Every structure is written in structure tokens, then in C-alpha cells.
Length: 247
Image (cartoon, rainbow, N blue to C red; front, side, top):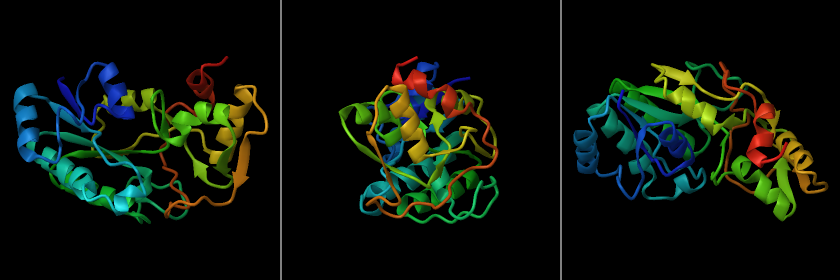
């Protein structure tokens, strides 16, 4: 099958391209321009699009004027043109988890609300949704991706009680390329906390005293529990050492 990736410059997009998909980054395709989307589909004739393009800075989505165009309108337009798989987020949920694929969505921030709209639009157009969360891998800009560099540089602050399901980007990419239909969850099966993940990375790196536990961080609203049911990708404990380049 010919699979086209939008947002190919991001963490997930790069992993998909590395596995043989054709990718277009922001410089090659502005997904907010319908004529560019149509031209890309006409040129590459994909059987499917995996839509990774997004403004993923959770707090910026509340103020970025492009957030709706990128996160909602662009995937909706794409899904009307070609079979589309939207990479969505566990941030569409709040309340006690793990959350089922058909569970009630209760986003607590702008990022989650935009993703709910995007999911509905893509599904209405006949597309598919794959939710994930806490994805990490080489070159990523988020906390779990950068944990090694952050710890080597000095102290880090980690939430003590926030449950997470770290997901290795390569495992997520492999699942996405199977093009699961409908709404599905693709996330690491081993649960942990932000604090435990950080302490484990500290130990693997042979460091000490770098992790500071915190009950809250100065960020915008976050789900209290965004765990996803059906978690079956490999767990983080077997992936973290390789990510850190140790062991």
C-alpha cells in the first residue's frame, strides 16, 4: 500500500518514514491549505494518509491562532479526500481510567477539545482514529524523549502521582502502519508515574540526586488520569535503557 504521512518532521512522522512510508513535513506541505493537500494526494496517489501533523504544545493550543486550522480543519479536509488515520491523544479523557475506546470524552484543555473535534470530523468522513500518549523516542522534544539530556544537565522536577503509559515511538509506528480501523488505542502496556520513570532513567545513567518530586507543576490544566484501556504495546522498562544509550 502507498501510505502518505503528514507532519513527517515530527517524532511519530519520522518513525513512520523510517519504516518506508512517504512523508511530507511542514516545509513541503502546509496542511492548512486545502489546495496543497489536494495537490499532494494527486501527486502521490496514496491508499491511506496517517495524519501526524499537529500543534502538540498543549498550553499553546489555547492561544495559537493556527491551532484549529492545523488540529481540526486540516485532518477533516484530508479525510474527505482520502482514507485517513488521525493520530489522536489520551488527553481527550479525564476522570478515572483506564478509558475505553468508546468511553465518554472529557477534555480539560484546549488541546484535548480540539482533538475531540478532529476525531469526530475524521470519523464522520469515514476515517479512523488511533489514540496514544506519552510517546518518546530519538529527537523528540517532549519530557520523556529528552529525559537523558535533562538529567545529565542538572535537576529535573517530576510529578509524583500522575499515572502514565510511556510509549516507544517505534512500537507506535509499527502499529499505525497496520492501519487499525475505527477507534483504537495504541499505547505502552506498562503503567508508571512521571516520577518513577525519571528515577529509573537516573539510575540507568548512573546518576543520583537529580530528580525532584513535585505534587504539581506550573502548567495549564492536565487530565488527572488519561490512561487508555487496551494498552498492548511493549512496556517502557524494556525500552528505556536503549533510548538512553546504556546497557
